[in-house]
Amino acid sequence: MGSLMSEIDPTKLDIFTPTHSSLYNACVGNNSLHNLHTYAEGYLQAAKILLSQIFEKQLLYERDTLVHPILYSARHAIELSIKHVLTKLNECDIKTDEKQLHGHSLKELWHLFEIQTQFDRRLKIIVENVKPIVKQFDEADPDAQDFRYPKNVEGVQTLEGKFIVDLITVGKLVYYLDEKILKLFELIRIIVDERNLNAFTKEMNRDELRQLSIELPSYKTWAKSEDFEKVKQLWRKNLGLSNNAFSRAVNFIKNHREFAGNIGIEHDFISLNEELLREVMATAYDVKKERIADREIEGFARMIKPDPSYKYLAALTDKLSADAIAELSAIFYISRDHRYSEEFDFVYNYHQRDFKGLTGERLEKAKKQSFFHVFSKSNFINEVVGGLGKIGKLSLAKELEKYIINEELELQSLGVSMEF
Image 1 (cartoon, one colour):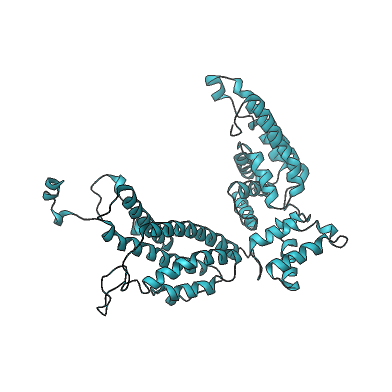
Image 2 (image 1 turned 135 degrees about the vertical axis):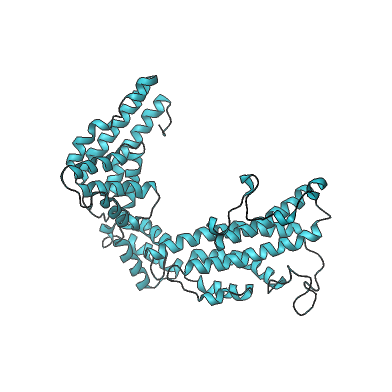
């Protein structure tokens, strides 16, 4: 290694010019998707890696020099995490003046963080879990100087009065922090989605509204049974809701495409109709059975055999309007892509664009292509059933589940994977 180092000419080295194995080219600047999230994650990973190296390689001589990079990396990860959350909330209706995010005081940032996260009970739980760690790091290094320098700007020794850092305790805190911050980042992503989709009320988040819709009895029984009142009083007590707040939640659920289905209010299709969808699903099941039977064909003969779905294509597309095909595609993709039910209209309008301005033969060709694109997929039945649940058509989804169950039983009897 020494002879190698002696051959290096530092004037010819540029860290931003790739000259070695691409395995070790890290993406930065214009060639990356970095943000406060990835920076925070990077600093926390650095702390974890340094700690693991000390423990695994017993770097007992190096521990006194590595302790400061470890502590600073952990502290900086906390600072960046707070700034990331507040920046993400700025993308919806929870606004913070960006000038308040420029400092390094954990105390000030945390105070702002606590204020801005009071609106969501899920956030409050994580905030309380992380608070003791933030407090400890803030007290040790209030202005991001003590873990970086031996003396502060006034020439006073940093970490004065401190003598030892228990690196095992640091390791426990860092790994705990890592777990909580990952959960926090995922929750913030969800919350920003919910706020931008207006999937909340003043007092309740989307998860709570969904759970309430599941616990409420059928809408038809509300005036006759005591079950509705029992659920109402329980939720009011547990969440501290007023009568008006609970009424807002109930009205939200009744008008929500997905949640209304949980209380027995099912919205109509836009262009599809149930009988036609039943026919499409029955045909899709027939296609599945033919594909399973085709497994007996061997070699090249099986490869060149047309997919069974082709022979049903013309008959089905003749019965389906372009809008019905767009709606069927939206039902399929809202399930397959794990999208929110609130996005259904957007996905439907997106698939309508396949037919915009088309007439005659061009329209019929586009209909066949668009319909075949989803109908021929091996997961067509499963995703349509899942999509029906997302748009609140629960009774029809339950009815059509029989095709999934029958397929599972048939494949199990043949010892074939469900992914076939």
